[in-house]
Image 1 (cartoon, rainbow, N blue to C red):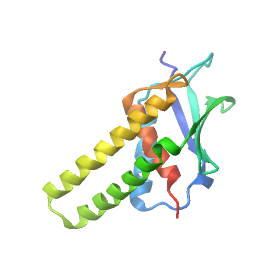
Image 2: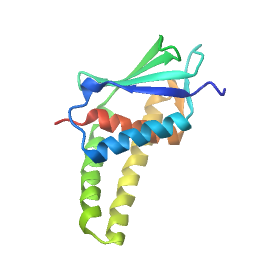
Image 3: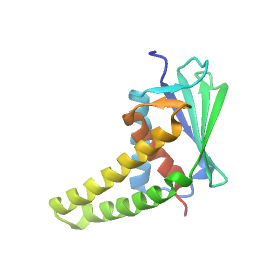
Image 4: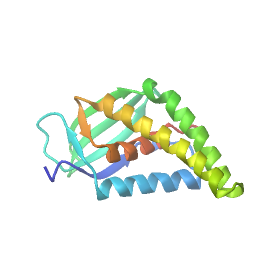
Length: 157
């Protein structure tokens, strides 16, 4: 089971329109954290470790391209984005408030906004686990980091 993990993540760069410094930091941290520790078990006769190609097709479908360590394709899981759209939009709004608050509000006010941000992030992570059920088994920490990357891919200029 030690090989049932992601060792590299490649984001579909054509899906990404713009990145603020904060978004770039979140992207880099999520990828680093996933590679350091994750639980990723695709359903099927796949042997890990895996390279994950994460992307968005037609602005409506999320794609998980599963590749072996040599980057040879093993399979793909496609999920509709519609169950996550509202949550992603709400998450973007609270993140903007959070980054703005860091510059001008008190620590207790920042903490309140951060708690709301984490709550939305947790909800998105749970939805992702549910949507991947029967396709890819991930734990909550892996799902949280994948949700961050899905948000990065969903940013539009």
